[in-house]
Length: 172
Image (tube, rainbow, N blue to C red; front, top):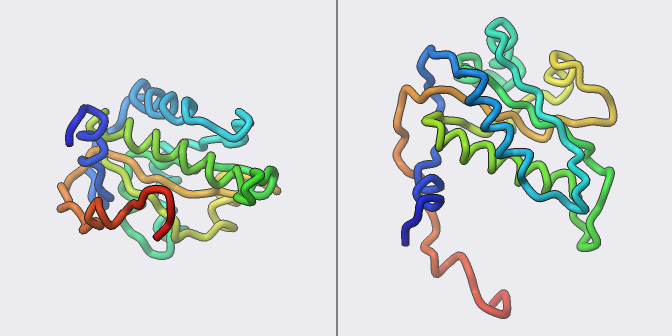
């Protein structure tokens, strides 16, 4: 199996070493454009991306991210902010979390297309990050994404075999 999009998806890795190189604003805007094109429940679009490019702010992220030192070396950081419990879909799942995940994945894939590496960060202090970025209540930072030009090429992580991933017509 191959195809241009699948090739980009196959290239995706969690990059934790970045080169000291600035990412041009036009590149960041293309990444954001990919994010805003993601589908959302009832087209609510209840999220906002806070883009951190200030090097002094970026240097504060290792302490916000529970000692993950590499977060302080990113070219920029995306904090995706959403209303956590504003809308629950009829299936019982929170739309804000699902919508935000779609937005983040689009942005990560566009970053790869731009020659960048990234890493999702879910281990961080919500309170410290919100304070640093002036995020108001009741908003929450769903996740952080550190982005930059990779200084490493991580090996692919093991994945399930395709036949283990799916079944037709029933869970069994």
